[in-house]
Image (tube, rainbow, N blue to C red):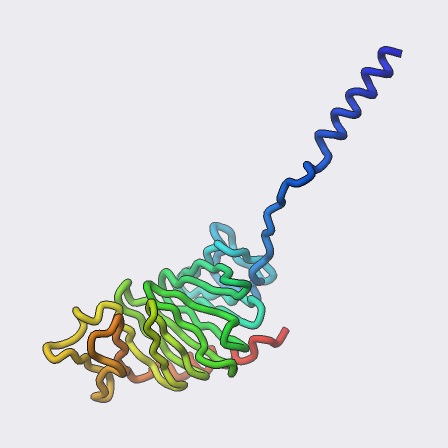
Length: 226
């Protein structure tokens, strides 16, 4: 009888140890997106493959001649060669912070995605299908191209808009970048889109890499397509 009691007590202890604790919270770790194309790319330290699940806080990176494309809701993010970005979630929408290299994103609406780079936030200006490309040149300088639709660039409470088909250098230290008369210089003899005492300055440049841009456009033009 004593042996049966001992076995019963041990079983009870084991069942209590395995049972969930009522009231305890389980972290809600929902996937942010899925890798849909990858070559010489990584998610964290692991090799990125098609179908790899990506979570908020993960770092995507590519080697020389590498690339990786992520689908996240109504947005897609493409990192080109020698690039890295930290992906995350803002109020239920995907975002990424570009740390190095070049990122191209496409969206199906204005709230689908935000790309952060240094102090700037770049997002679609409207709900129309949008493709934007950002190259991180330094902490104080970006190259932003609106390949399809218009882009809104914001630093703190200031926002400037880049129209479709235009490319601009974004100078995040305008006092150092402006000349003696507070102006910059751009391709084709065009000056800055907005000068004066601004938190940032954008200077028009000629768009290059037409063939590459067209390939990116075809790859990202339909962010809602399965």
